[in-house]
Image (cartoon, rainbow, N blue to C red):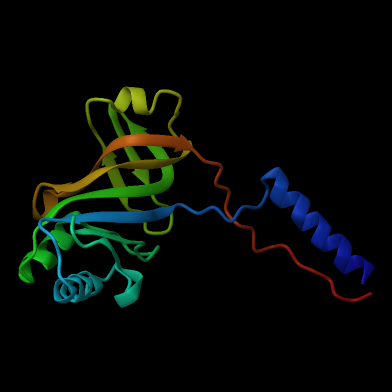
Amino acid sequence: MMKRTIAVMLAGIALMLGNVSDSRAEIKEIRMTIAGSLCGYCVFNVKKAVGRLDFAPKGDDIKIVDIKRGLGVFTPKPDKQASFAKIKSALKKTGYVLASAEIIVSGTLIREESNWFIEIDSSKQRFALEGPNLTETLADAASGASIEITGDWQTVGKDASSREVIRPTAARKTEMVPVSNKTSFDERE
């Protein structure tokens, strides 16, 4: 019992020191604004249309938080790449218009020449970071840093030349460290 207690204490200390973390690189949330107000039937149709996308959750995990303003929120599957264009197309086929979307992404900041990106480790999806306030928003950030970006999101271009773009409105540094699977607990006394 003593060995198990010590192992649990050491794991707790490692978590506090940052050797182990449960923070992950992922799309934390997608906030959709659908043009016009929504009725109860509309809510059902929007959830069904978005829920058909491979990166979206199903049914009740897609929340319509304001029917008068057409606001919907969901957290996509972590191992799938999300697409603004796919959401827009799915809604259009059902008779709705995706007016805009905001996204919260946690990942690794990457700089290639004068271009900035955020990459999600699990899906390897990259979002280009653009906009007039980009320098100010990323003021204290460096390439390779763990960061959370909030911003307006859209797909730019079509087909093979398309890319996902975020115009950041906020950024904050995070401390993401991969969770270690090598911790073992000896339950023998």
